[in-house]
Length: 417
Image (tube, rainbow, N blue to C red; front, side, top):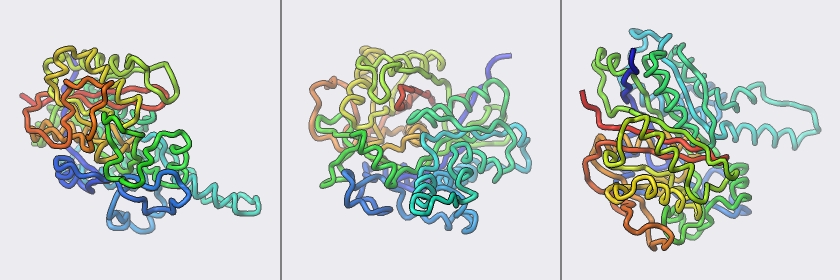
């Protein structure tokens, strides 16, 4: 028996540039930056004083007040984006076999705010360990898929993937594989992250990973620009619900796109720096294309990892040229991190949303904040700088690369019978 086809039937988003999928997409195509001075804590003594925070979000607008207090923000974000995706896909779980519906969720760090608060409270005390009984259940990464499964009564595969910034792309690849192997009918996949707090920002500043363009936050995320100086931290969640094709057709589901391939690789080089020749990035895209059974000339768009870091952007651009050859110059490429910032473990899901919507709407979202060409990056590549571009997108790749050398790429294509 052959592999089953898998399609995308539900989408949800809670991002720094929109608290729903329609808001997110409108902001993307209009080149809106989500970066602004941080409001959630006092940044006076911090090197970086801005980030891409979720805006106008009150968890009690979506969740029971008592229940919300038991959840770390990264779990709140997961539940809210998933609720939108479930409504969007029209799933009536009372009529479906919930033993064959799972949740596979990605996060790179998980409940950092909970950890920070609990350890800080302990440090201020007399040494008596007075910890909240919800400390551990609020913090652990796998609690996000756990809460999603409990909310909807889903008893299929349920776990979390952790591979730094590649986490939610790995979640989608796992979900894709479970469904095409016949082990599930529907899987809620995606990722969430909430690290804009004293520990998260202080830690990334200590690594010299973040932009310090405090005088102009809105233009601080500058992927592929000569003057980029680090990534801008982001927070939020993206949900992508995958479904076996015949199951989706039987219930009359709308289909956004088909997921056709996934690739994974390791740089095996350095804890934070990419391989200098982009070998891991090239390998992961090669594997994803082979899995999808597509040639380089069949890809129209790559939503790149493109974090706005000095080394990473150069190596990813090099990997694309090395793999695609002359076809590289026919592609549209963009880094939506220029608008959303870097959502770490949630980046793969949010950027896959952008790739899926590019296919659906025949529109490439831009890479904003481009001012100066980088002489180390091939000038013939089309990074869709500063303005969205209309074009048919037959197939798209979404790339995510994480600290530790983890690489993951996923391929979506326009759905055809």
